[in-house]
Image 1 (cartoon, rainbow, N blue to C red):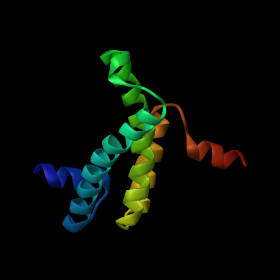
Image 2 (image 1 turned 120 degrees about the vertical axis):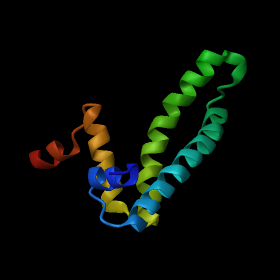
Image 3 (image 1 turned 90 degrees about the vertical axis):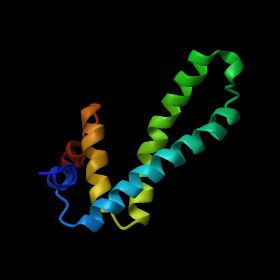
Length: 106
């Protein structure tokens, strides 16, 4: 079984086309979140002169939530909302935020 077949099985994807679209969404989202973090840092007045560890540490902290939001938005634009929303919930659950548990309480 090759790498792509393993991904399809792991992500419960049935077609090669869907797998290609998902990979495209991941690549666009990574680039878009890196691009979007720069203006946010500038708006907050965070510059490289503050020190590289401070600058990059804060940039990574800003990148993470930006990436999460953009992943669902861009995935939805590419017709893969169901996949990326489930992917997002699984990722947030690993960080202790169980969105499904909050829905059950209501």
